[in-house]
Length: 358
Length: 195
Image (cartoon, rainbow over all chains, first blue to last red; front, top):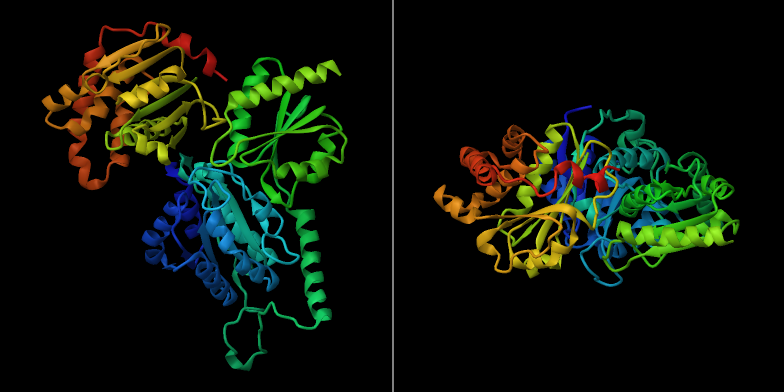
């Protein structure tokens, strides 16, 4: 571990990506993620990488497609409206099993929306987003430290499974500063050696490598899908990550990710001071979702509260995981508004009261 | 112990950098810190602000709605945030930028003529550091030495010649409130923030 530094989430993620050996960054500026692109433009060329400011998000993701297809460790970053534009390219990347890291520092929508933080891209992030049967590994940091940690993890997961990995943050995590220590990281050569499949030219007459998402024969296309699905099952079995706080004796369980989990943690502290037995489950991977752990917790707690900066999207995954065993309630703010600890506390009080009345 | 501050004013008054200096100094003293800036349309309405939390323990939320202290450099920000100071907390405001003084009687209120002092020090830009000096004199949560060390990190290299005048500003700010005390003892106001 190195010395402590005070950094914005956007900058910490960029620095971590460089330390993770990113060879190319392709992006287009958009608030609230622009510091990431700015940091890359300043640092990456001097540290052995290539920085390109593309003409659009569509161009960015296709540059990622090309460079990653040639075997390079590359990434792009954007915010919500830009992420929508990238969906076609991401679908191609998923189909051709090309690893890369995509960062979405979410802002309020729909449409051009606002530059304030939001979590309204949940469905688009965890349900594929583009056309077809595919998934991204979705990492949800909730601190500046995790913004950095998940950049390292993201590249390793992408290369391990040959999938695009999405780091799903929000405007507040991107803009805020916290102290951070970069972990020691060594690029694992077995992950970055892509000579088996990358389109690097037929040196010494080697067999042709083809990366395409077009398979006109449906039998062939189904086989491609089966390979993807087998991979997703493996990811679901091996890569679920989450954090639990005070779940041992909890009656009420908050489920929240990203910035919402930080605000919920504060609400939990306030509630515990009043004697309310509140716990918190924070998914760090939104896909694969920690369904099993949630299903087990539903045997112990009485009610669940999902807190999101959206109209309630993850709440569907929570309901699926809980299988109707206990009630699942929701509290959220939309369009760039952030839930306040006191508002969540009010909701917890009401839920606790009605639990006692039952 | 945890301290939750909001620093607010016009863009250009050094609101964000004041907060950043505090956060950096807190980190140098081995504490947990968060610095959350406003970056949206509210800045255009004259209420640019940042929220700084300095704590001995892991900080749950960087988003909070009540504060131990408000350091405020203009009227719109005072109007907006006065109500959000916790009972027993404090407000430090820049005298020349405020027409309607705070009216609450359950908090300590300190009027600091920082602009005049800054003019005497021949650098109006260090007004924010005078306020910080006053704040730290009555709320010694961090060593002034740490603030100086932090300034070396926060200021770009070509501005390091300004560190002595910043140091003077911190000392002047402290002198201006010497002898005063917070109406409430500092240890009393942190009950709410001890979690």
